[in-house]
Image (tube, rainbow, N blue to C red; front, top):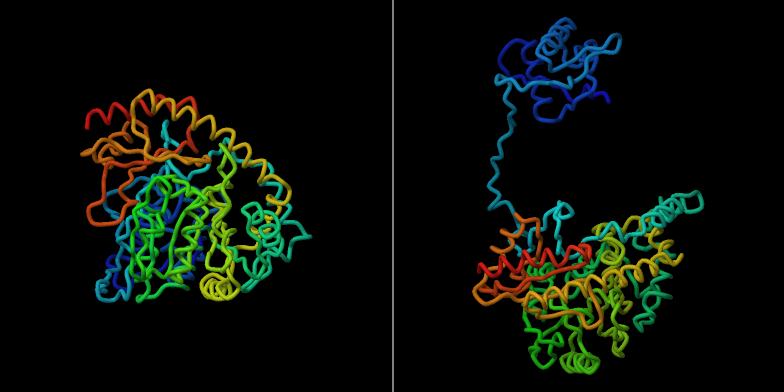
Length: 486
C-alpha cells in the first residue's frame, strides 16, 4: 500500500536542513505507527514537487533513512518502510499541538461520571468467563447468518441495502416483528406503532428524551440496569428508586408523583426476579390511578427454557400506557445493536422524529439481514439451541454453588442467562474481582446496579452464557476460595 504524498508537509518553524527535516518527518511517521512496515513511500520526484524542494534533497534523505534501516529499496519499484526499522534516540515522537482550551468551562453538558462498569474486551481469553451479555461463538449460527447477509447483498435487495429510508424502517423487518415476534408476547401492533432502534439501550434513551423533563419524575428499580440510570440522570429528571423484592417492582412502593415507571418484569435486571401475573395487573392499576406511563423492558424473555414466559405487561394494557422495549442483540449477538419500540402512534411519531434527527435509521443492510434470519426460521432454531445449552450450564452452576455453599439471591423463574449472588457482609466484590482476574476468572461485581451514595458492595452476578458447562465447577471453586479469604 502506498503512502499518500498529501501526508507529508514541512513545518515552517522547524530547525535544520531540508534533508534533515524530511528524514525526521518520515522517521517520526514510522515511530508513531502512522507509516507501517511494507508501505511504499512516494517517489522522490512526487515528494519533491509536493514539498517544493529539489529532487536530490529527497533522494539523499531516502538514502540516509535506508542506511539506518528505516527504509528499504526495491529495484525499479522505489522505497518502502523497512521490516527492521529501528528506534534511534535522535527521533523522539512528539505531538506539536497544545490544547489551550479550558474544557471545564467550554463544555455545556457532561455525560461522563456514570457508573457503567469496565468490561474487558479480551474476556474470551479468560478460562472462566462468568461474564454477562457476550455471545458464545460456539452457539451462534454463523453459516446461516452469512447466507442471510449475502442474500441481503443481492441484486433483488439492492434498494433495501442502499436506500435512505429517511424516517422509516425495513418493511420486511417491521412486518416480521408485528406478525410473529410481538404476538408471541400477546401484543398486537400496527406497523405505525413499531420503531426499529439501535438496541434496547437506544430505545430507552429515545423514550427518556421524549417523555421526561427536569420537572418530571421517573421511578426506577433498585437495583437496576446501570445504563438506564445514567440515561435518566442525563435527562435531568427526578429519580425515584424503588427497592425490588423477590417478585420484582412492588407497585405499592411507587411514589404518588411518578410520571414514568421503568420496569423489567420478565427478568428483573440484575436480580432475575420474575413479576407474577397478579402483580403485573396491580402495577397497571396503580399506574392508571397515578396517570403514569410504564416502560417495559422485556429483558431476556426469549431465554425462557424452564417454562413458558408470562404474558408481557404490554399485552395486559388496555389504556395504551405501556411502552414496550425489545431487542435482538442479546439473543442473536450483542454487536448487532438491533432492537425495537412498541407504543401508541402519537408516541412512536415523536420518537421517530427524534431518531431521524440523530441517525435517520439503523443500517438497511443489517435490518434486511435480520429480517431474513428471522423469517427463514434460523432465529427460532438459535433460541432453541441456546435454551438447551443454557439449561445444562445453569444446572451445572446451581449444583456447584450448592456444593460450595455460595449464597444465591436471585435466579430467573423461567430461565435467563445469569444468577444474582450475595457474598457475606463486609466483602468488597470489586476487590475480589481484581484477585480473580489474575486467576483467569471473570465475574461482575454488583455495586454498579444500586442507587445511592453508599451502595452494598457484596453482591455480584454470575452469567453462564459464555462459559462451557465443564469449566463452571472449577471456576466457582476458585471464587469460593477467594471469598473465604474475605
